Length: 217
Image (cartoon, rainbow, N blue to C red; front, side, top):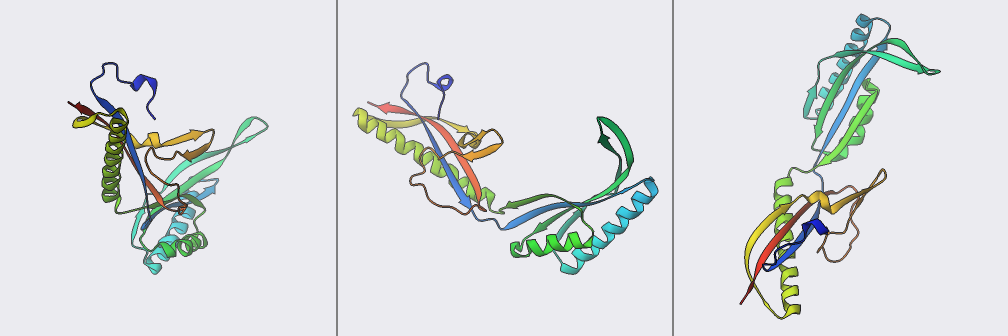
């Protein structure tokens, strides 16, 4: 996992990399959507967007989804490209909504309901966990344990004894993921053990660490 630039220039003991990935079940989903209306005159665009937004707010109040954030109405000029030329087509007024759902099984009904109520843009559906801090802490503990196990294996193979820790460096867990073209793929963690099937809807939380040990005399 470490590249040539990260190799130790001055030998002092043993330096190892440990990593871990934990998959947690989501318990909250963040929804971002909006109503936008295109009209030739700004006043008409504002009116249409406000009317649609009122219908969406009314629906959200009826189903009692919980936490709802709403932006103020905004407006922008809209253009269309035809035969390489930019043509003005009117004014677009927009009201954005952000909803946090704690009942994940209601997500489909809520999205269907807001579309029926007037939403014409769904920009994001993001599953999250409210236990991220605890899961991250566990991933870090596992990464340290993986590094120590690797160091012990090296020392056993070299017939030396592992000494005390003299340096711990946190590593960005993004090194556990890669990108090829437009596809993001998951790299098997350095010391995760057996490859197992997982829920595609689960949340992946990673941790990585570089630890330097002394070699005991």
